[in-house]
Length: 124
Image 1 (cartoon, rainbow, N blue to C red):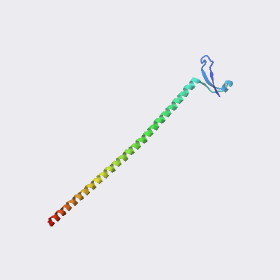
Image 2: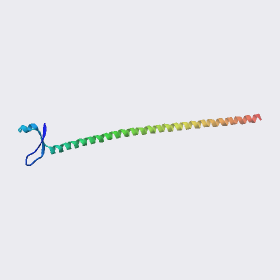
Image 3: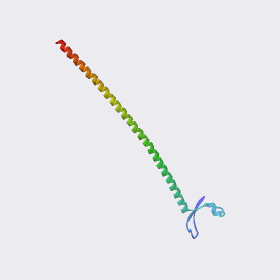
Image 4: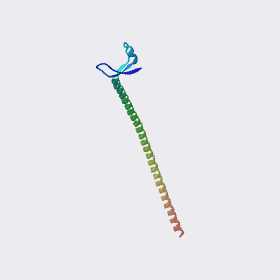
């Protein structure tokens, strides 16, 4: 296990450190020793680095999402333009058809008027 201790040396009086409990009994073996303040700074640096990686990942994710949204928006715009073109073509077709029918109706009315005029002049 790892235990915290207070230093009793003159240069680091009361400075706290981590040490493997076995190292207390076996002075010749190299076991964990670390000043707590330095360990905390290292931990903060590791957390900062991880935070930076997460922030970069979020930024990349946001960029990918925006790219996909823009592709879909462009697709919707293209579909809307195609639909408008089809609508315009259909309106033009119907207008042309109506003009053609109006010409036929006008010619029919002229023919009927001529027939009525001839019939009236013959029957009087």
